[in-house]
Length: 145
Image (cartoon, rainbow, N blue to C red):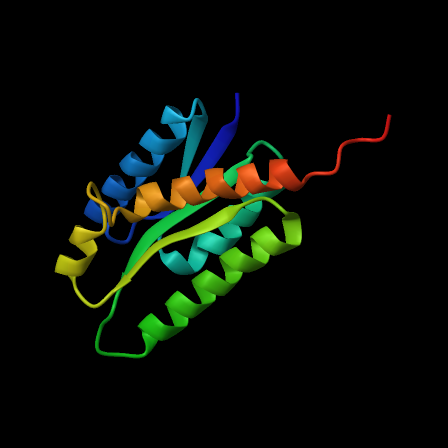
């Protein structure tokens, strides 16, 4: 049985809970076990993902959270660095770490993408982990006999 990590930024608790629930449902529906780790904001997601990967306990990591644009440039820095950091973790380790962070203009957009329906970012992030693992398995060179 595979084990998956969900790392989630909880700055927007209501959104975080919905994202965690939908990602958990996907992983468990695929027969996996899930551990959830919470961090304060999206900027901390790459480090949490790195910790999860370094533990060697997880086949993949879904990184979840929300960043809602405000009146300053803070949004741009947080979104860009969270995305870059998560990508760096997966490229440097080979463990799928997906970007399930809502990057939206307002709370209405966030709620529309945080639970249920075809725009459910938590479920999409978990499905992306599973898809990358399937590709990895298809392309893996068999061990030498």
